[in-house]
Image (cartoon, rainbow, N blue to C red):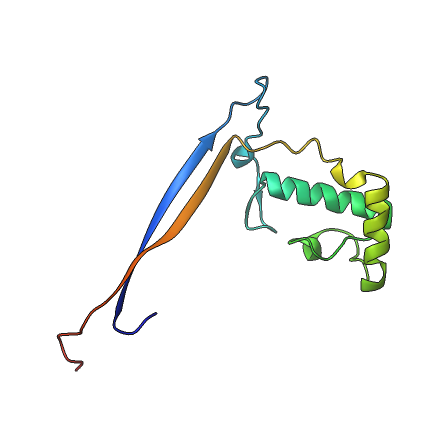
Length: 129
């Protein structure tokens, strides 16, 4: 990475656990769901929102906006560049884009914090062979 430099990094993980229904947190145990081959993993809160939005876009615009991570894998056609603004305006006008209440936060959520802990120079003592 850096010639003649020692780079140190620190990584920490924080896991938050929420309580499932009937508790107020009303979380979803996505990790207990089925494996999504097309996504290469399990459903997540962000994935649920994305799928919900793509379904609404198909309903309202008859196409899916291309900015979604998995829009190319979603059933239905992608919106042409010329209709993207018209579709977005229609979704915003009808308040449709905020209709994904069935997507609850996950019961387990992990975040990772990666930091540069230090950089220092060093002199190589063993010559290369």
